Image (tube, rainbow, N blue to C red; front, side):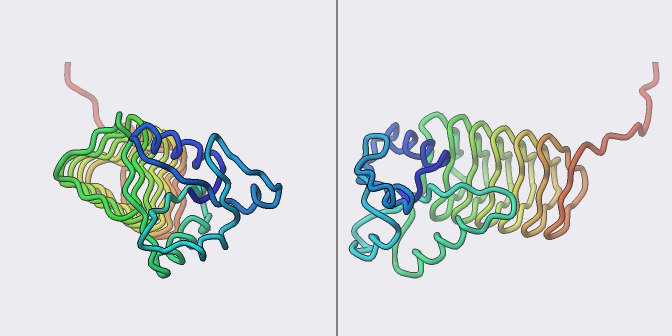
Length: 210
């Protein structure tokens, strides 16, 4: 396990619930405090302790969370992959992932999440608690779909974008690289790269006849 923050706690629970043997945690703060144990697993040391491991003999769990504008999670993933380490796909036992969905290296699917047919999720992306990703969506690498967010069918989300808690992206829309859809927002049009969308775009367009 890399990191010992809130996201790491959730991942440890996921991994243990899935029957995985988590050998220990690497975290500079815990190492500096000379902690020997964290949540029942061994503190191995800081990030430098990974130099003592054979990259082909262990799998890593990226417990670094992803907030808006944060690149730490992406950087540590890319650095360690370049050294030969691998990151397994993690899916909570209570999540639903259709058999036709494609999950690339290091994808993390949390409790209650739904991933529907013919969706593709890029490397190191997070589909967080109770998020819903419908059919034929294409999600890039290093993306965070936060708790309770909803992507309707055929949505495209490019690398490093952030769909915040409770946000909805309607069918067929795209979210550009590094863009942010704010919490509770409803995105009804395409959003360009590195732009931030906040709020609802609901407008009166017509009335039903009696």
